Length: 370
Image 1 (cartoon, rainbow, N blue to C red):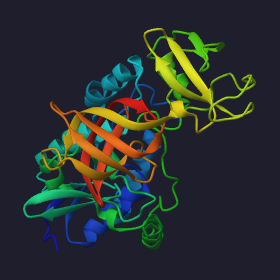
Image 2 (image 1 turned 90 degrees about the vertical axis):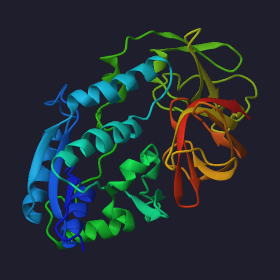
Image 3 (image 1 turned 120 degrees about the vertical axis):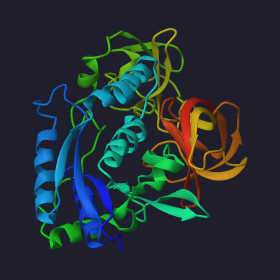
Image 4 (image 1 turned 90 degrees about the horizontal axis):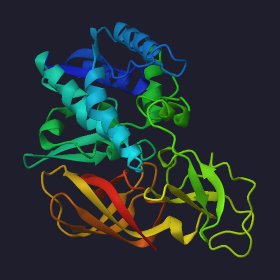
């Protein structure tokens, strides 16, 4: 039992953080809820649910019997997450703001705030686990393989993990919903939020339009023929199939990876010539990579793992892929894959695993075609 020690829980309005707070209360913690407001540019927008989320979080706090505080981190968020997000998009890469948000807001600004409130620990509704092993802290996958969120937490440090609890990491989502219904939480059946943390469900291109200037240019196929026009390279990501505006275009002659009617995919972004390269067929060689280079590495143990064989993810929703790690200097590393990886995207995170243990990772800088 926690013997009345204080834990500050990030209550998002969702069911995972709500059940996390209830579980900690059952364990004897002195639980305080915090609702983090990270975005306020268009709060009255139809896509921005923060007002409703706060009402849901407050209702949960009321049912569980804990205090809740509304804290505005929007300025921190804009400086530390959103500015970087825009810089990466303008450079033609596809960043993962949820990774940055965890490293810079939830486990920095929020952690600092919680410590000022006299907390021993902070807790969130992430599906992940923390294990202490000989005085070192390890980040483990959540037990529900369909919900594991360790990928988004791979930049956490020893100091951050030492202060973090993930109560639902030991549970499956179905169990979390069952508990929520059983104890009468008002958000027991609330739909999981999707999309980027600050964009929510809004149309992505429409959102980016406000901040990034359109720079139209040619869309070319693998033979160099112009088959359409793009709106600006920032608005596309590798592997993208929808929204290319070339659905009716057929390629003449045999194509590698797909027949005449195969769908088009974004395969390359040439920022120097402002050209978007597309190919037909999901299995086209331009979409396959046998190696990648990453930089800006962050390792949970505080140092890079030894060279050797590991599992890795180059995007969130994928099974671990076998790889060989070659650590480099200044936070760089290379991964080589025995099996080609699909649409490896600069700006996204390459995250390494040793079984269930998340070791950390880095930002993909480049990929080598198969």
